[in-house]
Image 1: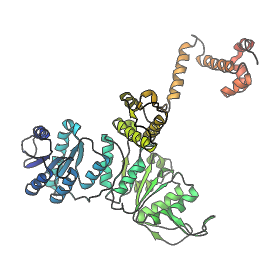
Image 2 (image 1 turned 180 degrees about the horizontal axis):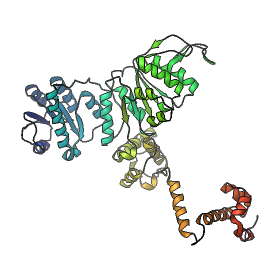
Image 3 (image 1 turned 120 degrees about the vertical axis):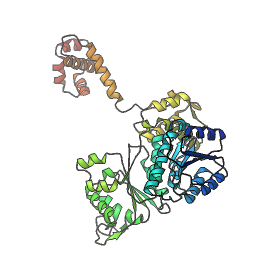
Image 4 (image 1 turned 90 degrees about the vertical axis):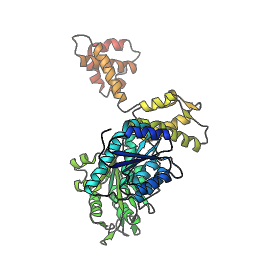
Length: 471
């Protein structure tokens, strides 16, 4: 490890003395003092008496855990950076640790490869902060809970962003393919925010007709349109003080986008059919599976609204980019489904897990859940083998099969003959055979008129009809 700047101190906290010894040797460098202890309360006393720049602590500690230690260190020494380590960090641990101010949360199995560069970066940040004299602010302590499952680096990065943005009121745009869990991220942002005691309201902009979406969002007055038999408060009024999650924001009509922009600009709006100006303190979180920049370029989404919504973007990775999460997700769904239906315990074989990890999952987590549900419903034993898992063909697989068939036909085409004409006659002959020589039905199966089929077959037609039972 490169020499550290002078007078920097690291404290390593872990109950495993072998790990303490390894980490000390692994990080040793000139100008770097390394302290270590095996109990959380001892670590607090060290930080109280000594200027510690960086703490590397296991989450599993006594007499209290590493997340509580993090909070106490932040109270005692807010400029001290803290890296937490654990075997398999849970969703809640990662978000809560980041929320409380952790510099990073790392899996122990990755430490031999990642610890040194992360520590180097942290110590450089300490030095930069010293030079700039910019102390790190303390984060509030929250204890929300979400069920986003995954240990992949890509998903852990999402958790960390959630932990950072949850404390603010900045609009967040969650992007990702369908089925990746965008609504769960919105719930996590709300549950870990100061607004968690208030309501989280969800609206799917693509599921509500254009003429009703404006009323749904902003409310309406009695008689403002057919069917408006009474005054109705909209979601912005109902969600005052809470969070409003607008799913599929890319499907919002342009006419409603204008009114949403006004709310984002000055926090005011009016009910449909009213001139009264209302205000609401609502935190906006949006989500889409579309590329909004493309929608803006096509004129289907307002550019000014796009920049208002995209203050912080959280991109959810597709399941194919985090295959290491598939066994955990599959096990979670297995347990939930079997428990709900009173079924015997079902487990995945190693080969079954491999099959799941090799699948492309175009439908992402939602498709995986449905696949596990079907496998449980059809299971004939308590162990799922690859043959027991009904994996759907990936989109495009039929197209690929057709391409392979065409390639085989091209290889079979007679030398010197027009290949396209020859393939067309082969298709026509096959269609006529399948319809027992019925020209009308054969033509219909190919989408062409019987006369076109006659012209296509030309020289071959008489011999085909002669061998058919009917015309």
